[in-house]
Image (cartoon, rainbow, N blue to C red; front, top):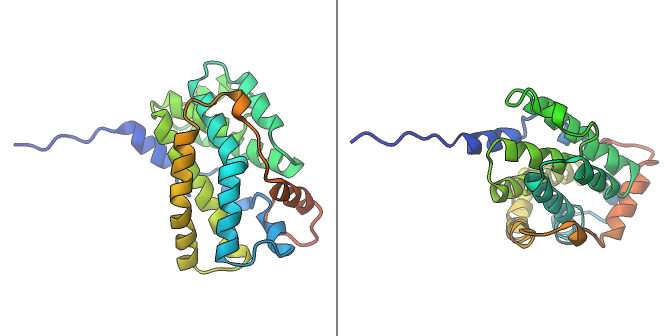
Length: 220
């Protein structure tokens, strides 16, 4: 009996969109981690794990998951893009999310040549991912989990370069954050705009202070 053909094109697209090789320029941004390392807030595998756990639970990670879900469900993305831009707590974070959003839309043009024309000119990264995932028939939950994995992995890699740490330590950090990210994906299902917010003030200040840091490897 012949085997059934595998035809999960949406999954293929999601893996392509969130691959480290997808040209969004995420490797250039540390999300304020560079300053946190500079001032001694992040010095080890443990402190990197704690910092990222807080961002996922109480900060940008949670907000981005909500924004992605809102964008996935939206027909018009203008208001959600404006809201997502307003959620950026520093000029560098604003530049980070807008630059990655624009790069994501441009790269996804290979699948959706006309989609970029229907999205706002300034489209933050989670909004771009949510909108294009929906157009690509990627289920909302899968898009959210994939986004959080890619988001977390990118910041873990930034920490490895800055502290520095080895690859084995980075994998332990990623493994420790897996249940946190999965819980976040579940808890943001059905969230509305009034669920946005955060209390990661030290991370926000780190992103602001990075703007005037003397030596920098990253753009944020």
